[in-house]
Image (cartoon, rainbow, N blue to C red; front, side, top):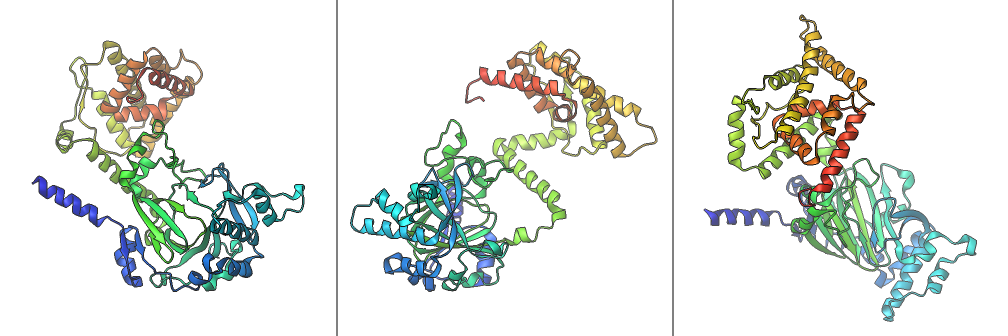
Length: 504
């Protein structure tokens, strides 16, 4: 039995390895066998027939060719003080206008010094290449030539044609045959004169990364590893970037990141190769000196077919799947089965052994006011709670029940509307909150919590989480005044100071 499980696990892991294909698939096979799985794949040598593959090659006069074709263009370059690592957030880099010919000059200088073995570009030579007119005309990039990266410079952009800066290079590249049915969002140039590393991030589009010259190493993580990568806040300008600096991670701040590399896969791409990176896959890219690449972005079928009016439904389905998955991971199956069986016999045993009918009443009221969710889980009060904690817990639960019951009594008998019930309950909560917004003595919630020691507060809070989740939800969402919120915050801070980092 054990050997069978190991064999199944190994088979699953092998099936999830990134494929390397020697021949490019047809459009139909790509969509059905690769794109639909949302799993990366490498296509060896699939862009070797591009004109760019031979004409852009720096070792074969490619820099002269590029300078002749687009040297007069001014492109937007990425200037980073953290080079060779280029972070995506605005605090770590700036976008600066740069004559393409000036960047080509830096690349040529880099090649010459690499060939003669010195590997160093003297500052005076670098400045001469950029040809500053005077000290007052100096540009930000003139003192940071190795901190420049041409990242995502548009060759084609169907979403914003005005941003296209290198359209004249379009005839040198050819859309791979398996993308011929795709509606591309953009095609971009990526070019660096010195070694560079991107910060770990994901793209909101499917991506085909094609290496024209040089070499790139790409480390990839599936979307399921998001929690270990600590994505930046969703409303920030770099929400698709990881907060973890992988070159020097601080595991005290990012403890889950210690397992990151176990979930990663690494591929090395040489000139002519292409890598399919599905949307949502985190990736970090290391580029050798003088590496040139082109990428294609297009919207996935899943995203393009999502109707806006279905967003709330999709969100609920996804949240439910993630919650169930986490429950299965944390709790043994036997515990989950026992919990499901005992849902039918839900009861709450207080310190006196009685049944808490009030919480059942609250549950019914919450159902009537459209606070839908699971049935109440099995509730068994911990007999280990100290008397003071039990007293505080009883007071908090009773306070919430009182507000709900008061609202129910005021509701007209003939009214059966869940909307009326919800509004009535909300009004009762609002009255309590407004009356007690600015006084600790007059705020019943704040007064109860303030009197508790941090350890006792923790036990009360955890008991509510486990045994009275609906009551806690109503307390936090509707009954917590500004004073109460401040008291909660203070208690959590005191609690943090008294427990170990691991427990925290």
